[in-house]
Length: 74
Image (tube, rainbow, N blue to C red; front, top):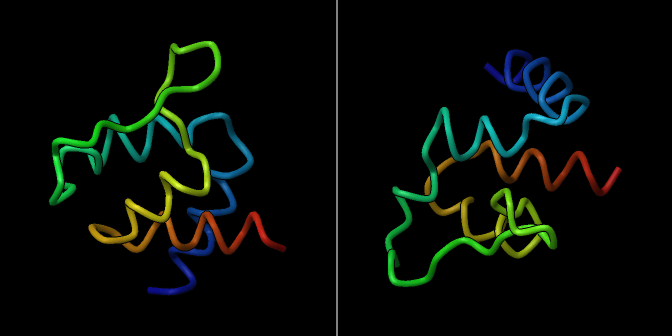
């Protein structure tokens, strides 16, 4: 399972689709326990942010955001 996550993570992080996977495919923002706090948007305001703060919130509902954070630290 870890190998699969690693392979997917490499693909996801290299492509500009982190937002698409986290929010459109997995819909992690809708699974957050505190729905009153919305996910912040990018500076342009078009896409949901994948900032460190947002990814940390999403780790409460799925392991993928933690892997993205770990990959960004490398």
